Length: 457
Image 1 (cartoon, helix red, strand yellow):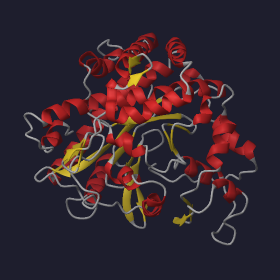
Image 2: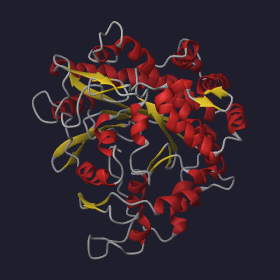
Image 3: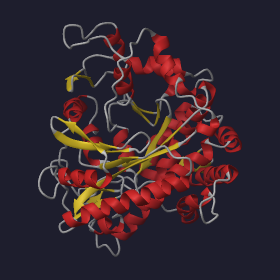
């Protein structure tokens, strides 16, 4: 989240919170695609991480991007920690370990997403090359220890870093050593949200397998294909993972709200200052728990929106749905992730087929699949088959959905073109993580350093 939301609208009751979600319902012709992707900055001469300070640091990088784009700087205690464009242009933010994130604009087609990604990476390269900085597109940092990883000067991250060790053993790794790509998609109604939430939650592990690219930690294989996903299995389980209640036929906005109300908060922001609220839930906040501790102790809609951004299920509900299961990868895979989910969720025929495919998948099976896929990837067994075969069916459904959308680029190509990287993975049965491990034990001579050049933007 690049910018803290300022919305002082009063929360009167549960209906106020429901109204927020209802405000996200859009007519199909207004559905858009918002793609977010993170990457690790590193020094090209020694493969070291890039600190915030210094003439070749992340501050300098952000200042260079600000001059080139003309976007507004986002400041935290005087430090530039992000950029935001005018309405609809997107934003740039820093993750805790310096991961550089573009939260893309709301776009109509995957071809538009492709143009946005290419333009962003080209500008980033223009600004970063004189500083000797490259960017690594991979799901987890392959070489640096947690101690070696820099800390960004963001107030919210100090609160999170203090809290994480209390609620799981991988929270700090999640913050500082992982990188993801996600796509944010719209819904037309509560019923449409339910269908898309249920289908995408069930299929999230398929995306995890297809996009797995984090097999290394601190210079050696870590035993996983998606260590990033494994980290999430051991991070603050009150707010992460697969949410069993969404499998109900009656699941709706109120159910998500009731869950969110009882998840501990991270903070509230008052007059630009962050107050640690990890000791209370949002429900307790609504019942007066912060009276006498902060100014304006009655929660407002901005507080609620901020709280929703601190929940991390595999599919997150805001006024849109966020697909959160994939490791970051090459620019082709950034576009492929958006294409994969748009094809499934933005075409009625494809959504019907995906729903039929997953209709009888129970929560226990989905939970088991999520746990196993981090290590076994496409070879993960599921009933009488494997995730590879399920992925083959799902990508075919996505292809059909993209074809049905009839969105063409200037060369007359439709959006199915962006699924080719996934179809190649399925054809050979090998993900990026599988490929990296094979190279590690052969021509890379058991070194992870070549992966920097294999995955550099």
